[in-house]
Structure formats: C-alpha cells, structure tokens
Length: 281
Length: 329
Image 1 (cartoon, each protein chain N blue to C red):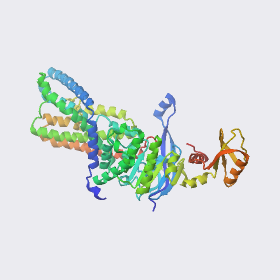
Image 2 (image 1 turned 60 degrees about the vertical axis):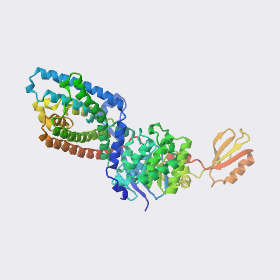
Image 3 (image 1 turned 135 degrees about the vertical axis):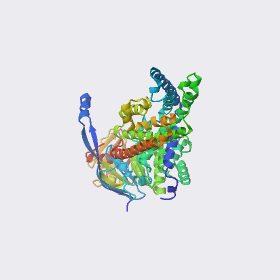
Image 4 (image 1 turned 90 degrees about the horizontal axis):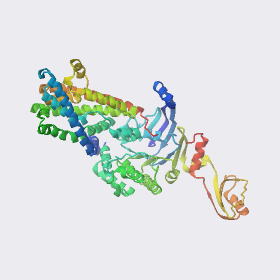
C-alpha cells in the first residue's frame, strides 16, 4: 500500500463510532422517557428490598442496605449499556438488502459491526447516566430519602476499579450485542432471540435482582456465566462488596468472556455471510 | 490480460417452499421442502480495462448475482473469477478497496446524515487521504451538480438527487472499476440523462471500467459498446449492439404515412406489423427485398405523405432473444 496505510488502522472504526454516536445523541425524548422510567423502577426495587430487609435481621443479609441502594441506582443508570436490544439500523440493512454495501467496504466486517455496537451502547448511556446519578445522589436526600441514595464509591481505589470494570463491561456488552445483530443473518427479524437475550441479561446480570441475593445453589452457576460481568461485578467493586483486592479476577472474568464471545461472533459472522442471500435479488 | 475474467461461474440458491394456508404453515414447521435455483449456470466472459459493458436480462436471470459475485459479496459454488488479478471473495478487503458499487434500489448514504457527512464517513472508511478526497469530492460536485444538496439529509432527497449523490459516494475512493446495478431505475427523464451523461464521461475521460445492469434499453443504446444478455443463468449473447441485432433478426421496419387511411397495403415481401390510422408499419428482410425496391413498390401503389426506415427497437430484439430461449421475464 501507499501513503494511505499510514493514516491509522482504526480510522474507519472511530469514524463509525463517532457518526453513530452523534446520531443516537439526537434521541433526547427517548432519553428523558428512559430516565423517568428508570427512576420509577429504581424506587420500586428499593422499596421492595426495604420491606424484605425490615422483615429479616440485617445481619443475615448478604449486602448492606446502603450497598444495595447504590447497586440498584447504578444498575438503572447503566441500563442502556446492557446488550438487550438490536441495532435497528442493522436490522433494516439486513431486511432491505443494503447489508450488501457493508460487504463492499474495505474493512473488517466484525470490526465494523462491533464499532456500531460501541456507539449503540455508549450514546444512550451517557445521555441517561449523568442525570440518573444526580437524581440518585442529590435528589433522594432532598426528598428525605437519604437511606435510599446512591452513595459515593467505597474508596478512591474502588472508584477507579469501578471505572476500569465498567470499561470491560462495555467491551463484553458490545460482544453480546454483536452476537444479537449477527443472529439477524439467520432469522432476519431476530425478535425471538432478542426476547431470550433480554430475559437472560436482565435476570442473570444483576439488573433486576442483585446477584448476591440469589440463593446459594444459584451462585455457583452464576459464577460460570458471562452476564455477571455486565452489571454485578463492576457494581460490587463500586460498593465495596468485592474488596479492591478482588479486582483482577473480576477483570479476568470479563475479558475472558469478551474474547470468547468475540471469537464466537467472528466465526458466526463468517458463516452467516457465506450463506446470506442478499434480499431483493 | 483482461481486467475481469469469469469462467464457468455457477451459483445455486436453496429457496424454502411454503405450502399455502394454515396447514401448510404447520407442516412447514416440521419439514421444509427446498427448491434449488440455479442463478448462474456456467457464466463466462472477459472484460478489458476501460470497457463500458451493459448487462441485461429478465428479472431473476442472474444479473445481480453476477454483480454481487464480482463485488465479492457472494461466493459462487463453482467456477473461476478474477478481478484485477484478485479473487473477489477470498481477497475481499483488498478487492473492494478498488471497486465502486451502486445498487440502484438501495442507498449507501446514511439516511439521517447530510450528504457531505456521508461522504466524509466514506472517506474515513476507505482511508482516502484528505487532499485526494477533496479533489474527488469537488470533481463530483461539479460533474453531478451536487453543490445545493450537500447539507441536505439523505432522507429529504428526491430519487434522482439521491442517485447522483450515490454515484459520487461510490467514486470518492477513485475505483478503477464501477459496478452499477440498475442505476436509472425509477428516475425521471432529466435525471436519467444526467446519470447517463456522467457515466459516459467517467468512462471516456477517467478510463473507469463500467459494468451496468439495467432494464432500460435506452441506457444500453446511449452508453454501451458491448452488451451481454443473460437469461436463466446462462449468457445468451455477448458482443456489440449491432452484432446482437444481427444475431437475433435481420428485420427492418418501413413506416409510411398514407394519404388515405382506409387504403389496404398488400406487399408480398413485407408484413404489416402495426397500423394506426394513416400510419402503417411494415417489417421486411433487406436480403429478400432491398429497402429501395420496397419503397418504390409501396409509393407506386399508394399516395404517401412521409416514410422512414428503421431498425426494430432494442426492446423488441431483446424480447425476441428471451422468448427464443424459452425464459421470458
């Protein structure tokens, strides 16, 4: 190659993330609606857990109520980062056959779709997370619900560890998102796969019920699944439920799963593209 | 060596057959029957650098399948295919960096973005250096008259405007080969002329090899020195437009405007194929009866206001070619 080779291997991918990101930032109404829903959801969850905590001795609980409240709020704030839906643009492309153009681009197709997933997972999260954090940290005490607030991280180290773990959770979430998008090549609609993934992800990641509250027998199974890396592990680092010394195994679990799912995704995409009959002749 | 070589290309698709009705749908859950469609059945051709080739055929003939194979999108079941010395599907990334593709029925522009932002995104995807990008962009803006469209989101463009932008988008990375799949489909007359004019200039002035599929025979007549006709996955004809004509029929048409609309024309060596008031169209074979002789005979028997001799339109030629191979669209 000539001079172009030097202009950065990542340039196409960064451009895709940038442009999708800017487009998704335009969905402000969806962000406001999402914010409202998630504040209500967070409140309901905390109310339920408070009832449970009151009816049983606090000492017997696997996490303190303050840890639990922070866990619930952070989980709600990061909802959009979870791989629970399709990229509507990819679905339209597969349906209309415009996906043919994706194959005419001189870049790695998995990389292209992963870049789309990065934009899809970050843009709405950034729109929602900051206002959620304000509502949960400042708003709750103002309403006289200080016990229900989002507390600061357990320590400075826990905060830093959380930031790293969230980065890894994003990488893992994008690998799962890419898998959902790739499944379109077989199903065209992928509605069934989305329903299954949404259920699995929201239930097994800690989004609905913090994973430490699951029964003992379930813990072993959860430990071997990828979903804890999406929500549970980073949030437990934040709240100090996992001491900062336990950060390395957490990151290893997240990155191990990310690599495995990226390899799987690449393999599936290769097969899917070989069999795909581009719609519309 | 030719720039594009295709030999014995075969591609079959499995199409799931559905029995109609509720019972059919239930049965389909348990057992699906598949029908094998041979989209390409031994297609061979070679194209030299700088050619402008028209590729025509009825719907489902295998045109798009051929283009998609050449573009590296589809992997054929058998046969050889090399474009600029590369096998499109095994060296996909290197291959697609040097070709441009336009699928007329779909856009490669980003629906919600202003046109110029789509261009910039393509610049980054193809890793075109800024200076070269600006040069290509400005040329396209001038040739395709895009200045007023640059800041308009793609969804607000008319079909003709969108097609001009799509053509520009396919050429920003200065490809040596351009594949156009029905680039004039659905366009109004003015837009069609603009698109044709642009394709012609691109081919003549830049030496870009163009392969164009179309149903519009005017595209072919206006642009292509060479036409390939495909039907049922097989190439029926490949050559200059005049050769195609000669192969299918020698027939020529004599159209006369009679003074007397009721007069009956009865010529032994010509057949009346159309009659519309004063105007009569006669088909004849110039090797059986010379045009001058036929005109002399007609004018000696009838009072005539006007007459002209022409070749049958290319549509008729192609329709006959399809019909002769028992596979009309």
